[in-house]
Length: 326
Figure 1 (spheres, rainbow, N blue to C red):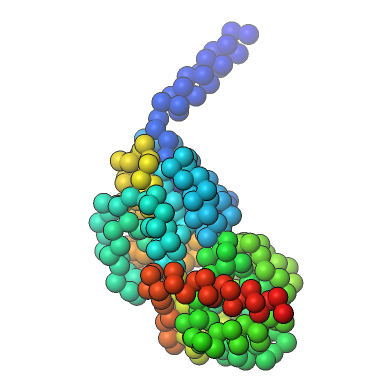
Figure 2 (cartoon, rainbow, N blue to C red; figure 1 turned 180 degrees about the vertical axis):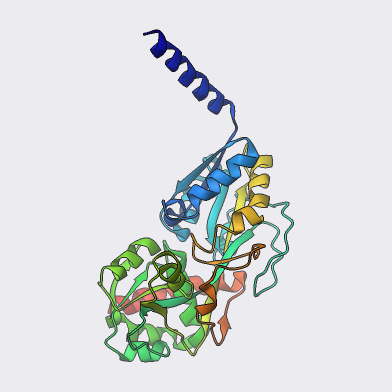
């Protein structure tokens, strides 16, 4: 009994010590906090330097994060949101819920970056992933004319889903609605987020899934499996830059700033390539892992500026919904 009382006392002391530490709550997407995602390693690495408790909260996919923050408003529990992207920056700023950052970094992005609110942590190109031995369409028109079955994500909840719509819009402009009319019968299902879509593809539910040019690196590096590839489209591939920002109403402003600066450090950035399977925003000291050199390089990079992406978004979603409802 004496030993039990001592043990109970130690547990109480440990709990009290943990409770005394400041807590930083970061809203992010589900795959980031999964066992195989960056979350567990990021939590350990940051807590080693912050003398705090990092609370990572998974909320579906990237676009759903903005909806959640809008809903919660100034009463949100979040101190930082990690997982929005360049296509949502303007809409996010319009909420007035985010504060400027103090991060200093030398980014290795294919575009110039100087946003005063949002800090990039990784980037990549959207692509359709398929079995390497399958015949890949060369562009969206070929895909629409084929019997290839695809799984995509909902643009209202998923950043890849929105990225696909803007990809088609950037490549085809006013002809985008025509492309979607052709693609409608190729779509097996539309999922809320990336994880569900990719899982269904791996289960054999479709020939291709909307993902990233970097996705085959996961299979090659983590599974020693070279059976997956990304289809190279001759119209070009749309770029995504994933970002984070602190909330204006956070009561942990200094800790949030510390996290954002940590996010562009080598300790964080070296975690990204083999957990989030994207290109890091700041190339780690040891470079990219072996296997990334095998990835396709888009012939052309497509990208809307944040304000234009916000302008194009509603029309692109309307065209997509109209095509799928026929």
